[in-house]
Length: 351
Image (cartoon, rainbow, N blue to C red; front, side, top):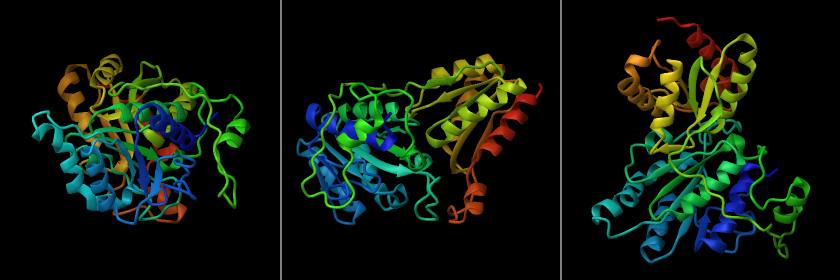
């Protein structure tokens, strides 16, 4: 099975050969590295940009206005903050032109903790991103969804922010991507660049197929009736694992993977909460003005009389960054033991 980085790479290859992608670029995105997480190895449209995040976003906007279809990478989301005004311009274009101009840009950026990246390589960005109107925002939790969401992002005529969880880049999927060889060693030999001299290397791409995950469509990862757990990205994987363990204790959690953070699948979340009467939102962004608070507010508005306990948020601590030492990191963002305690507490709550 492909890992998440390989899935993104295969999606980008499909995009450049079938969906009109003209440029895949960013810091170290082209040869020889092919991206700091190897997400762009072997792509014919990949090229290296200077270390200039504002230049990367501005160039992507120019390419899109000129009729191209760029995929631009900000190497780590920690360095995207100096681009907020440019992201705003990208998001405004379709609306401010009364629908005359489209901006077919995909910006992909690794997000979150889980790799011992310390203060400047462990940030989350989804809460701030959700305040930038005009963007579709997605975050996969597995390889097949990464492939399908990237193809949907490439096909969309307006800006899409594709956030890839750093801590899942090497996580293997449990479902084959359409066209992916079943043997992972075969896939490795076909599309992974060798260590050392890569000057003569060329990938042997599998016969990939057009598989898309629709935007605004959550996935029920685990059905249940006792409480609703909403998450995405790396924390979704942890939530699903904890829910499976707690089932032995009679805690029946329904786990939903949002996949699209904006516009998110309100209908599926509301339906689950109306069934269970309880909501826990889990992510690793800092807790103040967290995206999960918006989800809780909308659930409270729409499902107030169905709730039997106050909605809960489990998020990262309100600290400036994530420390390098494991002790700091595991106390800065939710860990399985924190998720288990939150689920147990909510499951035990009574009206």
